[in-house]
Length: 567
Image (tube, rainbow, N blue to C red; front, side):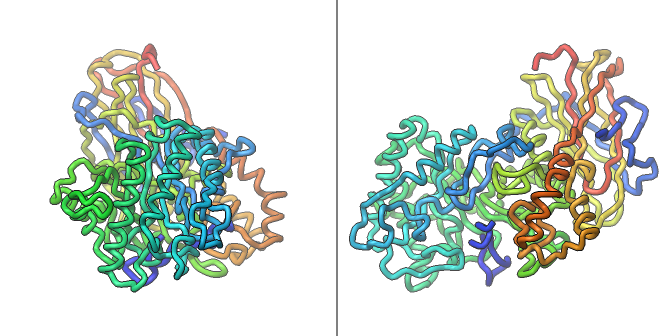
């Protein structure tokens, strides 16, 4: 969600509530390419990996977090269509979870402004219970109930943007919520969750003072944050993780970096002491559209705020991305906004693999996604983005390896690699991608990994290769069906490049055709197996060469381990 009048367009609006055989690449020193590959690929890249040169740092799970727009929409899937995120998602953000409208306020009677403590926390408690059933931890984004502001101002996201009339009333509300959660799930369990204060706190479309001035809005947030942390600490103890989320890549009402000064040196509005606790600071990051990157890239966005935090002595704050990816693409009936901010084309696979490398290079802890499937959150069948995320998550607990590259790339083509070694399972993991910032990109890329692993010299290893490309993506078939059946782009209110077909198609006739006739075919395509396995002997010199050719926007993952390794 971002401001409409600043450096970035549009936001995830309230309207979104509407809401085979594969690669046969060779693994030894002789190249054999996949069935669609060509040795005449116009671009090529060779990565040299030394498996003995490992970083001290351990890679974390960069895809551990997903967002849910409305806590009420978090549901346990009714059937298994391959959209299970349990292999990589660890936390779910429940956005705007504690109020802002009659639908989100947690009261018996949200309209009765004379009774402010008729709490009814059941809807949020139920959402947290569903999260735990999905084997993920809730991340509750605290927000101000509309009931706490007698002079409401409804913003573009359909919620009241004003601070509470009485911060002590808000404090008691948050404290009562924390007590209700601890009573239901246990104090130790709730202490293991995260609690965020607002979404994009400097975005005037989400939160501002009644007079709308930058100064008043900034002070109102500082006070809200202090009262929120105090309420959580006083009820749960000072062990709970507290987070804040700014736009950062987009100019807001006030400079979000001022918040670090407040946390480090400001007067706490609730306790009167100096400063307040901050554990995680998140930004939003959206590229404008395929082929239209945001002027301030992700590393620049994060470093801009991290530098200020370090200047203020906040050296232990973790930095991540609470929402983002791609804002828009081709225009639909109403606008070009992408439902859940992802395209259906395989472009998204290479985009996400490239993002993984960028995050590792720039110490970005996580990137929270809106969806990985044809629906939202856990509902639907897999997009190629989910296949990438499943494999990216496997790099968790591994140490990154020294890697060099020799590249011969066409204009605008990008390819990089990540190599890592999991010492516990003795598994070497490699990945690379064939990316160009163009949905119509069509060229292949020859990829070679030259691995030095002297500790495996002369040993037999098992090699698993997984290739994510058009062959396991239903969306190209949808585009063909759309053309053959005469389904116009107007069936989408927003961009027809949206891959989340379950929620993106709004025309009644098109939805009926999709769900009754087309969808089963797409489920089958999305769940095709996409890996090959074989064994090979590492050379006596400890060297192993892997070669393949990636189709446009393809991503390859390798897992290599000795055949007698304990998994």
